[in-house]
Structures are given as structure tokens and as C-alpha cells.
Image (cartoon, rainbow, N blue to C red):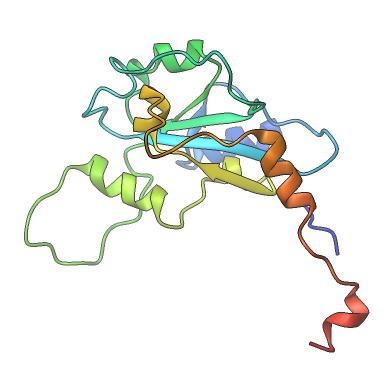
Length: 173
């Protein structure tokens, strides 16, 4: 059984942007054969300076050519963009209204962070078969104390090695 990747044209991306979806500075997606994998991170508010101050350029992205960073602060992304990331500006009205009562007021960036972290996949990423999230704090500092960036090749091999049974056997399980 083969997964069908969603195909989104440049015109469709512009229509999404007009409809309030994130608008990306470039589109690294291509039609190369094999599994389509993308790396993404986000920083809303740039409160810790992950985009503007702390970001250090990478010497090796370990094969990750399709990289996206989502932000509400495109003015703070010069270092990230120069390092080859597609910077996707998230509009102010992107997130649906919250339905929960809150005991305290939280910054909008906190809400967007949780929205992207727990289950929301931006339309620009839906064209990929698999997406890998990495925390922007790690991407900024390259701290390998608790985390490392897996290579694209390792993730691709993992995806390709998943056990696949013929459709005729699926009903026997």
C-alpha cells in the first residue's frame, strides 16, 4: 500500500496565504522520488531570542534540505533565512479561538506554540509524507546534551523499513 502525498501548487499556496494560512519566504518542496520528509520548528514572539540573538548557523543539517520555521516575527529571522530555512509568517488570526477558561492571561505566542506543538500541521507541511519537529531552542544553540538532530538518511531508512503487508493479508489480522 503506497501513501499518496498531497500535491500543492504554488498557486494553491498563494490562495492559502490569502485565506489566512502562513506565507513562506520560499518553497523547498520538490517532486523527488522516495519518501518526502521535512524538518520544522517554530518561534512565536522570539521571547528567548532564539531567532534574532541566539541562532548560530549550522555547518551540517545532516541532509535536511526541506526546513521550515514558523513565526509571527519575520523581522527577527535574518539569521535563520540566511541559513536556508523557509521562513513562514503566521498571520495574527491563524489560530482558532480558544474555548477554555483561563485563570491567567498568557501571551499569544504561548498559545501558538502549543497549537503547533500538539497536533496542528500547517498546510505547507501536509505535502510531505513525514515531518520532524525540532525545538527552536535546540536548533538555535546546537546543544546536544539532551537532544540531537537525526540525519535525513537515518529517518528515510526508518520510513522505508517499516513493515508492510499485502492488502490481502490485512484482513487476517
